[in-house]
Length: 244
Image 1: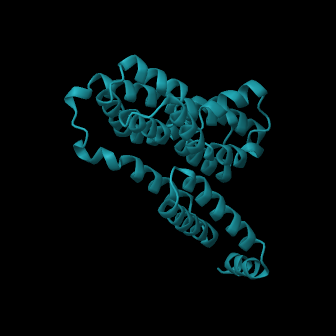
Image 2 (image 1 turned 90 degrees about the vertical axis):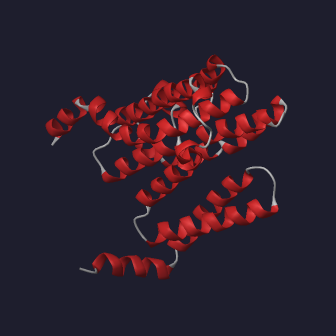
Image 3 (image 1 turned 135 degrees about the vertical axis):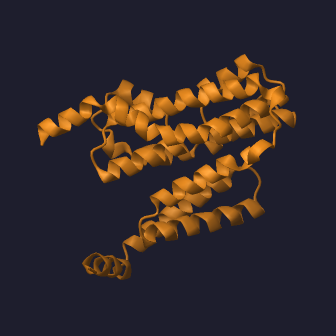
């Protein structure tokens, strides 16, 4: 078994790239769209590249560009970006047990590349088994490189690409829906998604800013954790496992 695992580990680069390919395919239209919007907002190709390298967070970058267009000051943009990216704390913490063999430098390198998409792919692979931190790093940074190149291309060819072309304004939403569907593997996951969505929607109606994203995620996770510990749910899961 150890020899078989070592043979698989030799192909960590190939396996990581194969796992990252769907993410890269999704990043292409979204990154191009962001580059176009950034170019329309007055950012240069270099500034777009620098933003993608430093921030590397699609939703935060879209918000940043939108706020730049509206004339927002730098401090509100920084605070908003920070709040939107707080969800990465939740994402990283849920993978911590799978990364305990990594050094501090390795963890820092991994943390830099965490996105919703790479988290979804790596989390699923870790749960299925046969996945390693090295493969997860390849997924993160292959996606990172693709994102940077696509945003640069979008900014470079921004004047030639209409902002609403091919429905690329909906591409980010479609990607999140796809990631959600891949992670729903039981009733508790359906309940978590529904509760989080409802909580976020209600918060969005009655509050300003982007805190509804964090509140929705934490509400869904907290409620479903409590449900999972109830006797009723334990009996339900046991009956489901025993069902042929």
